[in-house]
Amino acid sequence: MNYQAYARHNIHTMPFYGRLSREQVHNIKIVSEVFPFKTSNYVVNELINWDNYQDDPMYILNFPQRSMLKPSQFDSISRMLEKQASKTDLARHVHELRLTLNPHPAGQMEYNVPTLKGQKLTGIQHKYDETVLFFPSQGQTCHAYCTFCFRWPQFTGLQGLKFAMKESNLLISYMKENPSITDILITGGDPMVMKASILEKIVKHILAADLPQLRTIRIGTKSLSFWPYRYISDPDSEQLLNIFRRITERGKHLAIMAHINHPCELGTEAVREAVQNIRDTGAQIRTQSPLLRNINDDPAIWAMMWRKQINLGMIPYYMFIARNTGAQAYFGVTLERSHQVFNNAYKQVSGLCRTVRGPSMSAGPGKIRIAGISEARGEKVFTLEFLQGRNSDWVGKPFFAAYDPKAQWLDELVPAFGEPAFFYQKEYQKLMKVDKLQGPTLQTDNKQSA
Image (cartoon, rainbow, N blue to C red; front, top):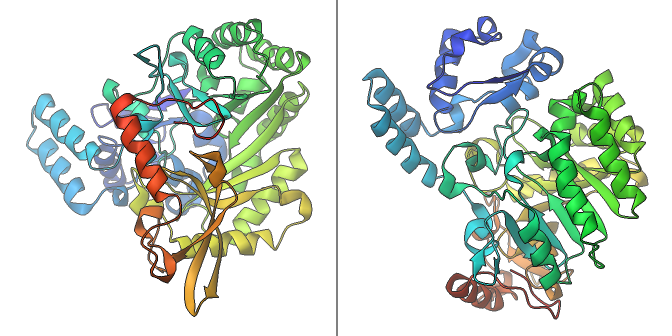
């Protein structure tokens, strides 16, 4: 069962209400006017330590906290509710506030949405040559919502901020026009909220298209943490697992991209059974998470998490830096701290855990890793490199930014050594100007993608 509560709903009816103070209930009601709030009985009953819930990472991960809004933002909504402002006025105010929170970071809406024969494909993103993201409309919610989620606009009901597509026909047509695409990432929201029958239709359509370049199908999901029973005892669990088997039996690599933010998400019998059931289909599970202040800003937590993942047969994949959207002010840490946490955790684990990459920013130009902090030419610098880029020629090239102990994101950095720009910036700005005028396009010479 899911428990969903927005400010306009009556939180007093929720089964966890009696465990919260009056002030906390008030804070949740205010903050959830801006950031969607939804949790599940699995999270409430099996993950949160209610004896110390105010500092519990799973409580913070699911329940909106007052500090996720600026004091002025919090107070303005609180005053409107106290004065019983009209729903129209409140909605207008909240909408304006949301637009100040960078709802689509890294140019997702402007530059990642491709076109096909003049039609904008609003249920697809294509940023890197090899990988296309598909947002099936039936999967644009989650079993529970992460308070840090960079895709929070998907759940606000504001259609202009959503990615979604009802049919996979356009996805197939787009891939046929762009043979460099080898990977499909089915994402959301969370595709695992869909009924197995819906996912089956999508997968059948993709496999029936017999796309010669298709090698991997990825599914991005938080369900292992928020509803592992999806793979155990839901009415269509076996049908879902059979879909996974069909993919792997066709010779396609199936990667479940699991979002795991803390070791406690891996401690229940349900998640262990769910992981085993998925692995028995031939699928691999790769794990990723942002580094989050107030939840996992500790090398020991990451080292423990990676070890547990390996023990369960999962593959550590990415440590991300919290994106500059939503409640970043609450969750974000400096780039220097991100590098320290990653390195200190990396040193504690064996080689099997060191498949993980990071800390990485999913910024406009691409995925950029903080590779080091060092001295060069008498200057303290960040050493950076592209793990992915809008132009694949950028990948692997090191470059340098002037050290800034307060910086939390790429756009806060400046080139080191007095250089006027980073090596990629001129080309990146040219790409963005072209895309804004013409819409995203793909160059089939495998040199750049939009």
